[in-house]
Image (tube, rainbow, N blue to C red):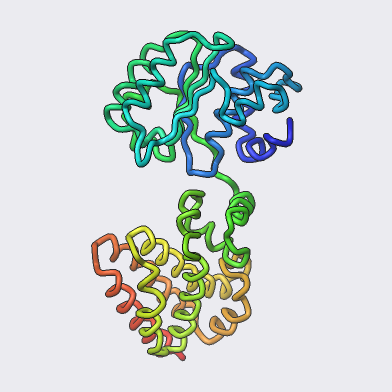
Length: 334
């Protein structure tokens, strides 16, 4: 094991061990589909296999990451290892045709070739159909890796002709560490892991400080709501609506919102797994003023918001109607 591979060995050690045994037994298939959320290490797994095949200085069956072969693979410079990524929003037929033309050639420096198609679900129908013949009738000593966040978006005939490997999701601690490295503030990283486990989604949510602004906006809104303060309507207009600029951000804002009454309920029950640990004291004060039944009723109200959004009810109407219902609920017991 070498330092450069520590991350993928930690995340996907079982899959790496599986490929190590397959290669040692000379049983590598011609095509694999690696699936799972972004950030799980699909590309790193595919590159590890390539390095294991080409490395000239294996260390206990692991690539050394120091020889010329390993270095060139790590830097995407190896002549017999190809990585294809989307050109814009899709992988186009010309990219696959180029790949197929390379399939037909012998390896530049060996008989082995490895092709990696990143975000394979973004292949156009023409590109997917063009690739299908190779998948059905592989030529030469070639191994292909198709990487996808969502195999359900791929051509079923391609999926059926590959060996599908679903990468293991990260555990909570690994996910929090990954998100912190991406730039998620430590005080909301636990909450962030509860609304997504996708690196790609987190990168979107970090744009324009959306995560931090949503946290502070919802915190102020929730503190007003639990007091029955009608100023919470002003906060909907001035702080929350702009955060829901599209359906994706509206869904994530609602998911974030549900964590606030969940924390109140958690404090009532055990106080062990708060989404917002920095709000523990404030939430304890709020929880002491209200019964478990009221908090459950509040949670039920916010859980209905996702369904309302799915029914195409206006986002502003959802926020405003939920705000008045929550204000009335908490005020009745306050």
